[in-house]
Length: 503
Image 1 (cartoon, rainbow, N blue to C red):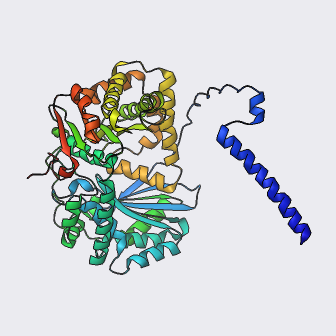
Image 2 (image 1 turned 180 degrees about the horizontal axis):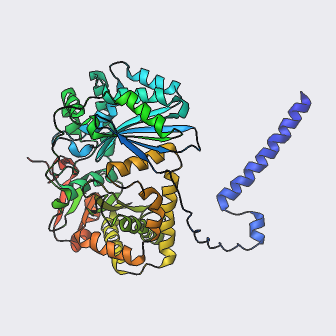
Image 3 (image 1 turned 60 degrees about the horizontal axis):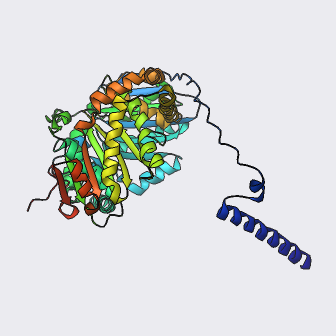
């Protein structure tokens, strides 16, 4: 016992000395050895290597007699299979006063069917060692499963059950409603979330992309079970769906499995609901809006520049992809200018979101309230510089490499591969794009990027939204713009394009 005690004390003493040394390093940032030798200059990182080509087996497809399009892509290097049932409509078909209906409907698919309760669905998938997910986005609602290839049949049975026979029980609806309202309460207390919601209304007005995908507190409170049942009946039908199966499974087995669980899915006699007659691109205002949401308790301001972008099927898609990459990311121009050079934000980024109809382009950053107007000017200035300034290869090449690397990572899993194929199928694009993606990105030149920025990202057509303590940035903002709309956060109404509650 004494020997053990002595050894323990010695170990504790050594440990204490180690902690003391570590604390000194943490506190002062150097060691004695570092004091004796000069710092080594930081080496310049090597340029990106040339991208390697990727070859993904070409998907094969078949349409069942009920109209269900089945797409299969084989990949046998891992014993996993993913399957996604994609409905060709999402948040854009929400009724005007029921924003969030499509997302709620999709989220409820896994919360109970005619033969399984929500816990039984979860337990069945867990027993298979798999996963199941459902939800909606713009243009699509999806339910998906992922399992080992030997268990795909059991998983597909569950997938077919949740898509075709959900019960939408009242208790599950109310539970989900409470979750949505809690999430919205949190989001509407954050300047960044408010700015993004407002941007959608400013860019798209009262057209289908204008409302929040997850709804508003007012719309979520209005949704009834009958609304959910009607949404499901109208859009969840085989002739409006795509089933994509990918991974370690042969095409013959995949088609046989699809026939087994989906061939008897009846196609309704009624036609699909007509698409909205309001194209998103037609909402672009003659004069951009400058909107300030005054939130006096905001610790910082969220600054967002937004305008219409492009469709997913636009011939300039890859030019836009590369142009946005030059702007966004840690080493992108926005972050370099606003965070690294000026220290005005923890991060700045942009997004070019492509959809069936014209999607949005946004550039955003959060900053201290006092610099809200300055950051808005910097975001707009970078759009102009991208169109009119120089873009050397030393800058363009790494930004292309980021795109290519991200694309490759998304193909590493069965789920990622299925997602890529499903997206191409959804928008009617050729499956060859997967194997041509790298060359398409590599072929974009600086001139292409500048031309795209000048014609499709023109800062003169961009709207500016700032959410924060207005008294700290409004005077400076009004020096730059004449028509600034100021809306107290208490008067904000996300259900209408005007954004202001009516008295």
